[in-house]
Each structure stands twice: as structure tokens, then as C-alpha cells.
Length: 388
Image (cartoon, rainbow, N blue to C red; front, side, top):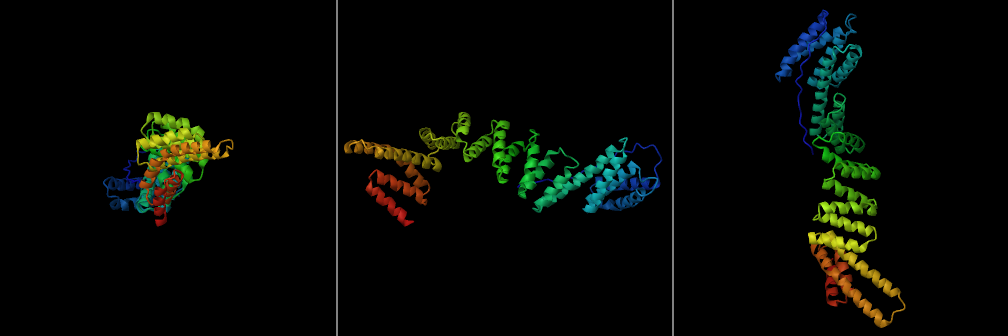
């Protein structure tokens, strides 16, 4: 789980450029807000709460007074005061009043003289939403965490940290639709520290949302955006193999092997892709290569053995279909097939050694010994099967 840090904004309210005389309530609200601000900057906001309360009382009167109700500066300070109250008292009601105040101040501030202070109100609400999200995250309340982080984006829509935190909160809540939206936004910011993990994880989110088509699209995009990233390459290979796109992906696997020739998984995937494309000889060579890299690679051993046995099975089937052969010629060819299948034995033995409690490995081994007419070994393996 990602660790999310909390933070505190220390905000400095820009001086008003209004040259007109301030009415009493606005002046009183400003003075008391400045008092609160000094305590807040010192890290003792609670001690300045009485000043903030006095500022609230004064500004509440100012917004309803006929001489000041349409004053953008009044509404600007209204939004700042209520934003601070929302942050201090964790009040949804105060937060909504601050939001309404920002909207009204923005509407009235046609000459933009209060624009900087309106931004201050938004920054306070941003800090408030972020901290609410962090608290909810720590409580593992991911629904509320997402709501808070997403709400903070209203005041900082391009903040990559907020976008990312919104995304991971949505993931924790299995809200894949919103997680995908947030992660997709991160694609526009390649310098963001979590960019690579987002690019690689985005196809997984589409899979979680049961959208295989887009999972494939973004898996390919991940390779395009991160051409040297092995995780992106392997993910693209796995998804395409699962989707039955073996022919399409073979050349990409080979290109990746050229960059990373000792990667056993790439060799294994190449074998799987060749098998799916009905190229058994090439598949066997790839599985053998994977075993050369790691002799204890179970899946590669199993597939190498199965490929050899399937090839001999097909030859035996064709031989049985050939009615033109004499008994002598038929027996000679069967002996040749028995010699060919001997190549499967080391892979069969290794599979059984690596996973001794898996009966399927033992059954394949018994079939092998039955076909090669090794009765003693066949009896020995049957006894192990019976023991299960």
C-alpha cells in the first residue's frame, strides 16, 4: 500500500489593492483573520480560533449588507474565512460555504483585482481535501479517500500527485472506471516519478474491468512508451498469447530476446507462441533453450516433454494409417519412434522431481515407460501413482 504524506499550507493573503475606504465589517473581518493567520503560521491555529470566529461574524454581516453584498472583496474574504473554518473544524457545511464564496467572488471580480486572494481560498480547500483524503486512507476508507483527493483536484487539476493518489484510492476500492481515468491522465506527464508503474499497470486495470480489448491496446502502448522496460514487454506478450494472437506476437518476442537472450521466460513464451502457431519444431527448440537457461524451470520441462511425446504420437498415428507397410517395415519404424521419444525422458524426470506430488507428471512418465517397453520402470511409477 502506498504511504501518503500529509501536509499543511501556510498561506499569505495578498494585500488588497482596493483604494476605497473599507467598511467597518470588512475591516473587522480582515483584522481578525490576520490575527488568526499569525497563530496558524506559528503552528498554533487553535489558539487563534477566537479571531477566526470574530472574522466570521463580521463577514457574515458584510455579505448581507446592502452596501457590501455585491463587493467582490467581501466575498473573497468570506471564502477565505470559511475555508479556514472548514479546515480547522472539519466541517462540510463550512467547506460548502467557502466553495459558494469562491464562485460568488469570481463572478463579481470582473477586473480580477481579487484573483490572487480567491486562489488562496482554493488552496486552503485543497489542503483541507488532501488532509481528509490522507486521514481516510490511513483508516482504509478508500471510498472517502478517493472522494477527498478527487475533490482537491478541483483546485489543482494538473497536480500529478493528487491525480495518482485518486487513482490508487479508486484501485483499493475496486473502482476500476475511475482508476483508469486517473491513470490515463498520468500518461501526459512522463516526468512524474510513478509514470512507469502507471504505464505498466494501466492494462491490468482494464483486465480487472473485464475490458480485454483496451487491455491489449494499452499493453501495446506501454511497450511503445517504455521500449526498454522488460515488464511492459512481457505483459504485452502474455496478454497477446492469452488473446490467441500468437502469430502477431512471435516477432515481438524474438525482438525482446535479442535484447535479453538469457531471459528464460521470453524463451518459454516463444515456445508457447510457436505451439499456438502450429510450429512444433521451433516451439521445442525454444522450450529446450529455456531449460538450458534454468534446468529447474518446471513449465519449460513439462512443455519440452509434451512436445516430444506429441510429435512421436503423431508419427505413430500416421504410421498406423499407412496400410502399405509390411509388418517388418512397420516394426522398424516403431523402433525408430521409440528411440526418438527417449529425448523426452530427462524432461519428464525433472518435472516429477520438481513437483513430486503432481500425479499428472507421474502419469506422463508411466505412459513414456509403457511406450518404450520399460516394464520395471512402469511398475515403479504405477506404484507411486497408486500411493496417491
